[in-house]
Image (cartoon, rainbow, N blue to C red; front, side, top):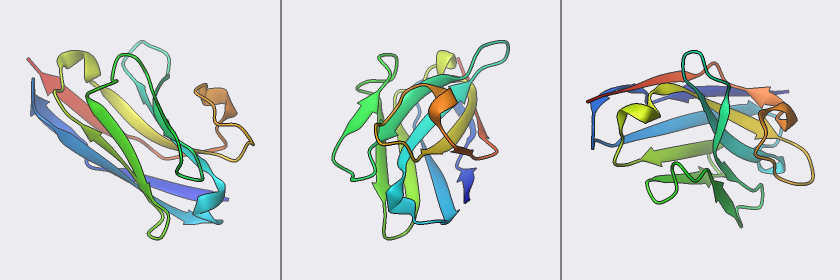
Length: 124
């Protein structure tokens, strides 16, 4: 089991930045690919970013590429999402997730553990 707790969400204005954090506990954090997903009201959960367990590669959704940066600190069992140039379309609940599969995925169904989510609201 892996427990994930997100923090750092809030209400910001267009163009602002936020940094989300995800603290992991339980099994060896470095064994998992880590991802960020988001879900807006009335929409399906969508992929935002992922970081391979080795820390060697990152993946981003086209909608956030160049604005968001995912990072991880295996020594501290933490993963982060730095979000810059936020706009109202980024408004959603953001979830941290852990994937123990061999290959990293961008589909929510492949992720094994999820946090409770943190709300990000961007006003225009």
